[in-house]
Length: 412
Ligand code: HSE
Image 1 (cartoon, rainbow, N blue to C red):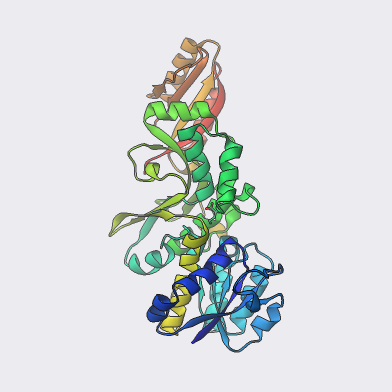
Image 2 (image 1 turned 135 degrees about the vertical axis):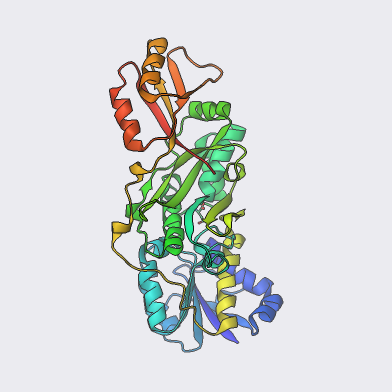
C-alpha cells in the first residue's frame, strides 16, 4: 500500500482524489499495489465531502509522516508551493505536480534536489492537461535531436478564440464560460496575456534542449489586442489566428522561444485545434513531426496526468535520474527578432494606390488581402520571409501608410 497526500483541494486536487477513488480497482492493478489518500491539505473546510476526515491545514503533519511516500502538489502558484515541494523532496518524498509556474521557474533546481535525495519529481500534468507529452518527449522520442516544439498550450485562450471567431461571442462572455468550466487560471490574465502558455513552452523547451528556459527570456504576447478585422483578413487568406508557444533551435545552436498570436494556414494541423483542446507539435530528426492532441485543461483531464505520475512512482519504486536539464546561464537564447518569418500587416493610408507602390518598392513581392466592408483607406498584406528587425526597418521607411496591426505567420 502506498500512502499519498494531496496539497490543494481546488479543481485539480478534488479531481485527483475522486479519480483515485473512482478507478481504485484498475489503478491498484496497474500500480501493483493500493494507493490510498491519507491527507488532503487545504486552508478551507470541506465538511460535506466524503473525504472530510482526511483534511489537514498543517503541512508539517504531512512532511513528518513517514508513511507518506508520494505527494501531489496541485495548489498552483510559486509560494508556498516551492518551499513545500523542496522540503518534501529533501525529506525523501516523491512529488508530482500540475504546477507549471513552479516547474517553469524552479524545475532545474527541484529536479536536482530530487536526484540528490533519490526520489522523483514528476510534472506530466504541467503541460497539455490530459495529453501525455512530458513522458513521450523524455522517453519515446529520446532517440531524436529535437529542432522545434510548437503548440497551442493554453485551453482558455483557445476556447475564447474559437468562440469569438466561430460564434462571434464577445470576449468577456467566452472568458466567463472558460472560468465556469474550470479552465481559467485564478487570475485569468495569466491565460489572456500569454503567461500560462509561456510557462508551458519553457518546460517543453527545457526538456527538448536540455537547458532551463526561464519565462523572462521568452517574448510573450497575449490575445487581448486581437482585432476582428484581422480575423477577417486572415480568413480571406485561408488562415486562422491561434496563440502559439514555440521554441526553435537556430543554425548557430541557439534557441528562440516565443508566445504570440499567429496566423496559421487553415489546412495545417495546429489550425484545426479548437475549444479547450491543446495540440503540441514536436519536430524530431528521426520521426519528423509528431503531434499530440487532447484536452489541455479541466478537472479530470489534468487529474488523469497527476494520477498517472503517482502510479508510475508507485509501480517503479525507483527514481528516474535521467529526467533533468541544466540550470545553465541564459546565453543559449537568441533574440527572437533574428528568426526569419512572414508577417501579416494592416495599414491605413489616405492614398491607398500610392501606399501600394511604396510597399511594393520596400517589401518586394507581397500578397494583398481583401475583406468584406474593407474601407478604401485600409491595406492588408502578407510579406515574404524576413526577420522582425528587417520588417521594422522597412516599416520605419514607409511614409504613405500607418501601421494598425502586425501578426506573425507560422507554417505548422
Ligand atoms: N488555464 C490553463 C489553460 C489550465 O487554460 O490551459 C491548464 O493548464
